Image 1: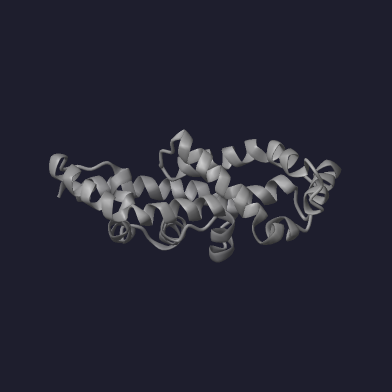
Image 2: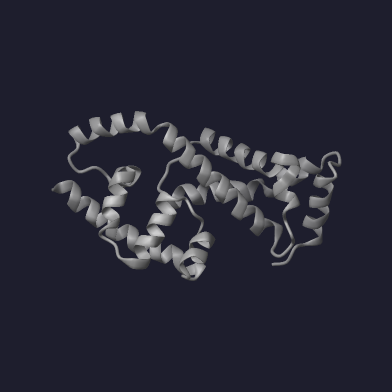
Length: 194
């Protein structure tokens, strides 16, 4: 899909700060941003409340306008505007999720300790939430799978960034992650049982 005239005009109007342009921009791309939030949360096995979704959407749109619309000014029209915004939105959402996760690590570690005492086999999502355990379980994987899991779950990289770093086609990153996650879940269950 190419950069449409409708998007070009809307982008120019936003950058020129014409009245109503930003509201139209938000209306046009809100669905895309919400989709990115939902998809990112789903593939990372994270539950987000409606309040979290609203907060993340606000962070994304603030990211678009920060530094005098720097994100929008950097768009070169080499793809559709929606594709460009989806990539930027995903980076912002991942960064914000990781920031929130780091901020709540102390609280969640205490809660996880209490939960583990009550349940000797924690869910795979709990295993994935502990960086040390993820790194230990990465030893169960080899080569490209380990690289992809490390870059995605620990470094927060996008499929595109992982593809560029590993040479794996971008459309193969998702299936590689799925296979690796299944191996990690199996290893995590076995590890938790021991």
